[in-house]
Image (cartoon, rainbow, N blue to C red):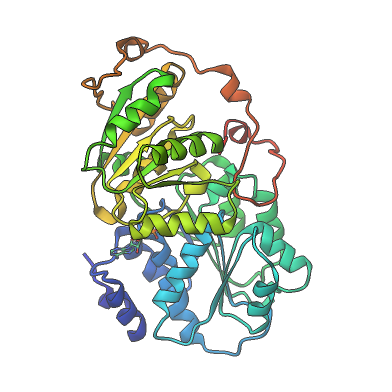
Length: 420
Ligand code: AMP
């Protein structure tokens, strides 16, 4: 296994890595850092939780510092596009940490908050700009971001960009990038359309792939509890009596569902809050902070709001509702097995969700163990192995829940099934 010192990173970066407490590079870092330091294009098939942020951030900082050069106002030198504000915020925090011993400036821009302070920061000139697509386009259209000086471009979570209908915006942005540049594209999955996008953006890339979905799932102790829909809340209340559940992320399919579960927990004397797209940015940040500091024992979230949330020490993930997309299941349970840790994922499955469980088990290539010893266990759901998906779920319109402008779900069937 390589260590960081053999990766030829500058001393101030190695010091920052030490400050962070990282001792060895994760597999994606070991494979991505050398080609990126050489200036090569990269196609990374990896999901959040694998350490992919540092995999691109460290070489970017390293090379920017090495190249020197003057900063111009409104002309960043590196651009990182992320699908959600939470992820953009976390990438930006990481870049700030990794460059803390160097003169590298960075900024983050996303929608849902005032544009003025963002313009002010950009006017001072920054090395690295982290952005969500909608707000970046606004800034570009108003003349506050010019991409002519971009040396390196990262498209993070490309498959999520697709799910959220952001690809047309991404294409408008990439059309303005200089032809001569370094590009890295990261995606947890590689559907045909993302492969096509990668082909159009990357030049003879190094392909690195780590932890396919099934591997991540294997690290998590999973179980499924069959329960009637109207008994889920009681079941949750019952489970929460277990003190082993220290910090729990609870997933619901809808925003209203998240509010209801959070309220119910609160009424049962459990410190909980909800995080979803109908909440203001301030309320979301407050909830996230409360969860990170341990003030909240439970955070109830929808899929998109939880995307990229990186909180250490999540002991349990509870799927109050099963997701209708198997990949979301893998993303969700991955929240409790960060950077090598193990975790516990408990899923509630009612009659209507039985078919989703079948899909999930096919994707993770394993059967989720059934927990029968709870007072609400319903064997008839367990036995309904040929259950069909409810039609109404498939007709649902996308509800992106990230506070950014909505896109028409053009030619994208996956969008139709999504509800944040
Ligand atoms: P990411 O996949 O980039 O979201 O990173 C997931 C988590 O792993 C974050 O909390 C990082 O701080 C942490 N991390 C990244 N690289 C390492 C490393 N080499 N050793 C230990 N933890 C790491």
